Length: 209
Image (tube, rainbow, N blue to C red; front, side, top):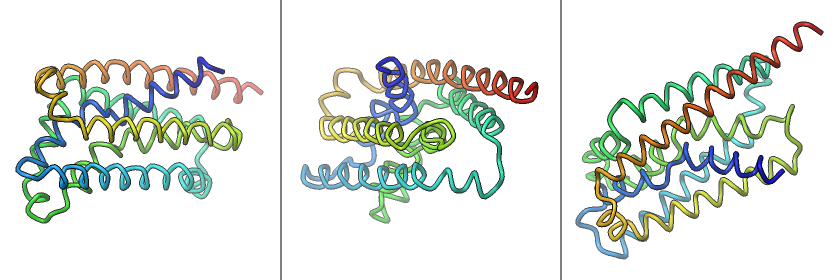
């Protein structure tokens, strides 16, 4: 049980990537006062949490309504996570790609929503992960509640890291944040491949029956 919890926590940490959000936060809040920094961090965390909880609760209903089988969804989800991981490894790092699109949002005063809440924290990979980890066919209500709790822990960590963003970035610098993002991509790629393998095995098993 503890091993499974650790695995879920690592997956959620990787797809939400609180460390990779630190340089994005610094970029989009440059020139703001300390009070505005805190307000933006709190708003971004709340919006991202709301989005992820929305998919955590309603994602299963969407899958059922579309008549999608669990193995098919797992395989599709694993492939999407793999592509997401590849962009983390080979594409622009999270700090570079997401901070680059903040200028218009900053002028509109909505940086807490974009790019911080989405796509930095509530990324497509994070949304997909919470849906997979709370599948009604595999997990009880209690297990899903634990997953929600783990997600909230990661979001709290993201909030704390944003509040301590300036001293953290002084230590790891932009290059360090980019390196961490790519390492997280490698971990996510392994998780994605494992998800696809398990889904294929389940698909073969149910077909034989």
